[in-house]
Image (cartoon, rainbow, N blue to C red; front, side, top):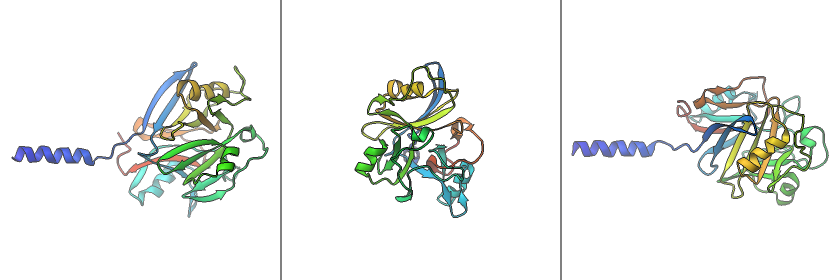
Length: 250
């Protein structure tokens, strides 16, 4: 009986351990190495982070300080959209259902203005990349949202301005989502890549109908279980997956 009770206690303790659906891998596509992390937004705590009462967060370490009060920490984080020189978001930014900066649908400069651009929207149980004008028409109720650009993949098609063999090559990061909103994939190139090949990663290899460029040159990722802690100067919006404190390490 004691042995049975011990086995039962062990089984219950195993079921009590939170299952983490986040999966990360390294792969090569079209001769470019990538780090890819895939999550199910219905199973994980995906959020956007920018600032708190003390001001700009800017770094993964500051987010972890903020999360300590909840008994949580980051298992993954990535810079999550373009920002101005003061680190304020370019375009739409929504945090906990509160719109901090408005949606932009008109012409603008740089990669953000390479229309069409798009919005990464987190709702209960799903995540979606939505082209900005379609977003303006539908106005989905996002708990978190960040606007960036250009779109990499739009309803299964590459951005019309992308050029095969384009010479503008940088470290780049982005996010793609499945049609049902249950699959969200983050990617960062581990070598310089052009927009055309980066878009093909999401469309042809990852089989995602919509994907959004988040940024380039400043791109970085934080995956503590993999020993990946990219460093650099403070950034603006960040996307993260949180887990109970102590469970993000090997």
